[in-house]
Length: 135
Image 1 (cartoon, rainbow, N blue to C red):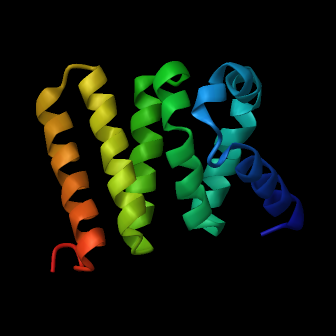
Image 2 (spheres, helix red, strand yellow):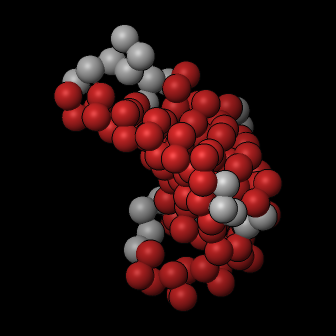
């Protein structure tokens, strides 16, 4: 891991994690311009800064639904879900599954949407109750 890659990752996560979606009209034009680099940063993050990369994807869900292809949205949220599972981030996995449910719902795949929403709900329930999922 180079210091330059880490600093670039930190720059974009600081810029876009938790951005105020009500300010989307201000943020999204910049994010559209930055998105090529943001994709590189997300790939790097999933290898080296996994939890922060999951947070970045979670923060970009609204942007994804507006500007990113169906296939790329599925890819990023699927990777976020898998990484969340590997690092035992129940909330990260729940948020990723919910985001996948949104993608399927927006494309009228209601069976897949329902399955992902139910899985997300289950993960959130486990998180609230302090129960390990699938235990």
